Structures are given as structure tokens and as C-alpha cells.
Image (tube, protein in one colour):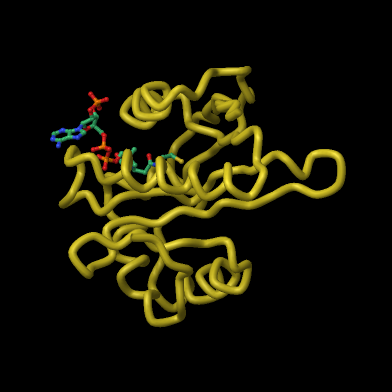
Length: 160
Ligand SMILES: CC(C)(COP(=O)(O)OP(=O)(O)OC[C@H]1O[C@@H](n2cnc3c(N)ncnc32)[C@H](O)[C@@H]1OP(=O)(O)O)[C@@H](O)C(=O)NCCC(=O)NCCS
């Protein structure tokens, strides 16, 4: 079940976000909780950051933003992850399918997102859902402590 994130979810989101199998693929480098508070406040205040619950606990999260004007039929996923303790159980599939259904009901026709080229599970996951690669954003992403800039793939799904 999805719901908007609240300030009370800070620690649960922080724990998943900073997990060694998640943080390499999200927007910020590892940081202490106190530093994360401001980033988390922005996510909550955006009112487009959702918690996905499974069995009453925070199982995952995602942000779904909408563009405006002539591209208002387009949405963008970001800050998306599932608790690593629950990986491989179909949670992300259920979470993203539910998100797509909500966006479709809101008139969205196209959903796009960026995935790092070295995120094989992420790429496989989205392609299974029907997302297609539309291009490469060269040297788009850089992790602290790594010398290399990494390419991202632009993936998109068209929905009727
Ligand atoms: C990508 C990510 C969200 C997938 O989450 P997940 O909950 O493990 O995904 P699912 O379980 O729905 O599907 C993943 C795999 O489990 C398989 N699976 C689905 N249901 C399953 C079940 N009941 N039992 C076992 N495996 C299952 C899927 O077939 C899929 O297999 P595949 O990797 O061979 O394609 C997760 O790995 C993650 O949080 N990664 C870190 C952050 C990230 O990369 N975010 C995306 C970039 S924006």
C-alpha cells in the first residue's frame, strides 16, 4: 500500500537509502542522519515522495514528479528503492505497478527515469516492466571516492 511520506518516516527511509546495496544508485553519497534531514524535508515537502508499505512496515519508497505545460502528460521516477532485506520478493514490481496505475489514472502517458549504466539489477527490473532505453547521458553521475564519471541510461515507458 502506498502513502505520502511523513517526517516520521525519516529514520526508516534513511536506513534503506544509506544501505550499501542502495546508496550507490541514488542521488546522494553516504552521509550522517543529521545531514540527511534537509534532503528528506525537501522530499516530504514536495508531496510527491511516496512510502510503499508491506505488512505495516516501510518496504520501499519512490518519488514521482510531474512536468508542467505541454509536457504535463510526462512523469519522472526518482529516489526509488526497496529495503534490501526484501529484495527479490516482487516488492518493487508491486510498488512500481501501483505507481504506474495511479499516474495513468491521473492522465500520464509517459514515465521516464535515469538508471546508472552499472546498475544491472535496476536496468533488468525496469526493462521487465516494459521501460525502453532511449539514450545515454554520458558522464552523468559521479560517486564520491570514485575516479570515474558514470553514464546513465534514459529509460521511458509509454502508457495508453
Ligand atoms: C531495483 C530494485 C528496486 C528492485 O527491487 P526488488 O523488490 O528486489 O525487485 P523485484 O523483487 O520486484 O524484482 C527483482 C527480481 O526479483 C524477481 N522476483 C520477483 N518476485 C519474486 C519472488 N516472489 N521471489 C523471488 N524473486 C522474485 C524478479 O523476477 C526480478 O528478477 P530479475 O532481477 O532476474 O529480473 C532494488 O534492487 C533496489 O532497491 N536497488 C537499489 C536502488 C536502485 O537501484 N533503484 C533503482 C534506480 S532509480
